[in-house]
Amino acid sequence: MSGMFLADFEIREAAFVRFADSEGWDLDLVSGREPIFVAKSYFQNVANPRTTITNGLYYSRRAPNGGGVTVAYDRMSGRGYISSSSR
Image (cartoon, rainbow, N blue to C red; front, side, top):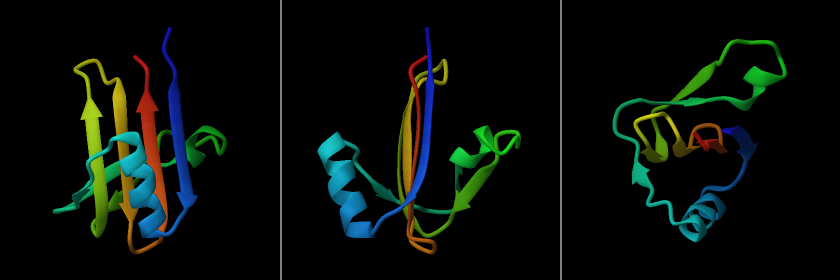
């Protein structure tokens, strides 16, 4: 059995950093472009849209089968993103 969790939400950067630290996510500065899924895809009948972050913080730990977690903070919009799969 597997499942997927997606969240995107407004949050201040300092609060996002504290939250990431409490979860053990070692955030890096975004260098280049980092895509991440947007939660609205599942309830707005849109096929897996992503947003791309170019100025923010990023952490990803994925298994070869796609399971794991990716989190990001977009400084331009003040939004946090979490994409997690238990595959």
